[in-house]
Length: 214
Image (cartoon, rainbow, N blue to C red):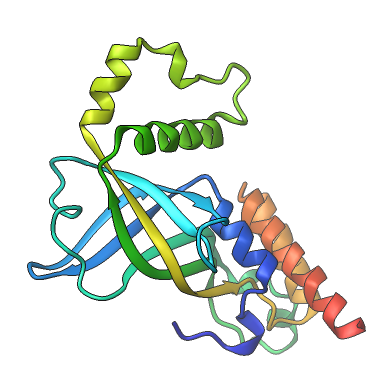
């Protein structure tokens, strides 16, 4: 991934991307060519040197049964947003501005391990459920459903574990713009209802200021 120095993600940003309760694309190279599936993952930092991403595929999905050739890849995406040049203070000064796109992303490379073990899958779906239900007023739990029903659901899936080898991460959040332009970006995103992207830009600006003052 092309990553200019000012857009390189720091360790805190990488951890935040890995921990986000979102779905990500699992991509594997197989003898049948590239295969990809969008699925939710949970990050387990205790596995190996760099941690692992845990998820599951439908048993009927051939991606798990086609052996991966070499490394597999998970593409994790943070908030992203179109950035209008009309938000920049420098537009009024000299007009030499163009649109861009802000985003945070992590390309996570690793070895893919398949788990066809009911106990492993039961633990995984409970972790995924807890992660995604955490913000609910009345969170659903696996044990809310009948035991036999859950057992049948588990038989319909296969677990996958990406044991992480390396991570390439990028946070392109207007760090290359003057402070006045960043103020405009934060205000523009907030006015458009993209609070997460606005917060990301403000956070990146604070980190940049801390590095410059430190």
